[in-house]
Image (tube, rainbow, N blue to C red; front, side):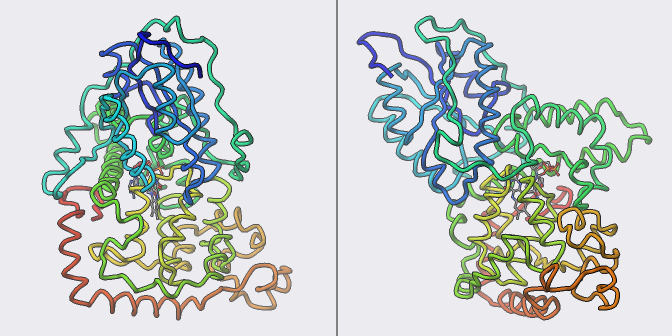
Length: 506
Ligand SMILES: Cc1cc2nc3c(=O)[nH]c(=O)nc-3n(C[C@H](O)[C@H](O)[C@H](O)COP(=O)(O)OP(=O)(O)OC[C@H]3O[C@@H](n4cnc5c(N)ncnc54)[C@H](O)[C@@H]3O)c2cc1C
């Protein structure tokens, strides 16, 4: 970048982070009301170094950025792409182009983003540059307690959408689009997720449209099935995480669909599916609000009375077997292997994997949380950390759920379709033996050429004993008076007050 001459123009800068769209983009619309706009993407090495980062995130992000670049070009807004630490990058940009005001969306992210925002705040102050941060989710900064949160969320999200601006391309800015570095340029490994969802707004719009036109009809029946959920769930999560779609525009489209369906009894189950989908979109903000209100939950138990429960018992071998999908529990291994390949599994499987790591393997949640964060293309810190802690039983305000892998396999994958797909070494086994292949009668195993422990691992822990031991230990902790006292405070700060929320979870 060349240094800017004295007295030359300066611009309204929109700093795009996890809001990679031009539609319903508060920061972009507001910036354009003040003057000529330039867009900015900062590729921060801290992101690539963070233990939650995976190359698949960058692939999805890049696909979104390439479309964003095109969409911005159509409204006359150049997009600059700079690699470096945020303050250094902003300094360079300011010297070259001049930042008159900075606009971005609020971000509820990991500790490193929080620290970076503090540094940026300090820098803009020293430069006399106003920095406007706009909300994109129903998340409220500085919220004292949850008493009126649901109302606040609705006010933020149910509103007219922001329109993309239209300006003439600034003649002093070179028309050639800047090149987004590839993974190789950034010395990052290729993504191993061969079947991950494709990024970009256009794909996101199609995903939403097919859900609202057809796929969503069977949302409720397919939600918990590992196979059917692939098509039956909304699948909008990565587009929300990276901001290719806004939550308000999704809610608006759901409302339009509900209006089209009307009250006719024939559409009762369709409407019910859409209402459940809407309530899950409310959970999205509900869980992100927890991290916003208490950033410490990235590192600390939400209920501090659980400190010491698992920290000193971390079994690295169990952890590695869990990460690699070779625990000897087919639904766990199939779920993990599906995640390796696709970067997505449904809610029930995520909960089952996390619960298994926390209870049967008695692993503290932090390392499993980081591992799963790398696997999820839709990794959203606020949802992820809150869910991880819930499934580990360290909030004190949620009912304890210890999933039995055998029961989950039999109930959620009765035909064995999912297990067979991701554990092909079990493909020849009859349905009855798929949940617990180590129990296959030796004669039958022999005739199928299947030897437990050779073709597929034996369970790394005793299924019954590990389940009962974990149950006893967690219930004992829950009985402690300090756990219950602390739980009241946790509820005060984070608990849902919305009694009507479907399948409400605190
Ligand atoms: C341990 C664990 C970790 C998770 N980590 C993430 C994460 O990093 N990112 C993420 O987006 N979701 C996470 N979830 C929540 C949930 O599993 C996913 O949002 C959902 O599977 C995404 O698929 P979908 O878009 O098809 O969801 P749909 O069922 O179609 O729901 C629509 C949207 O509602 C929201 N939503 C749905 N379920 C939940 C939920 N339980 N909590 C909060 N919001 C919800 C999501 O934004 C989702 O995209 C996690 C769940 C668990 C148990």
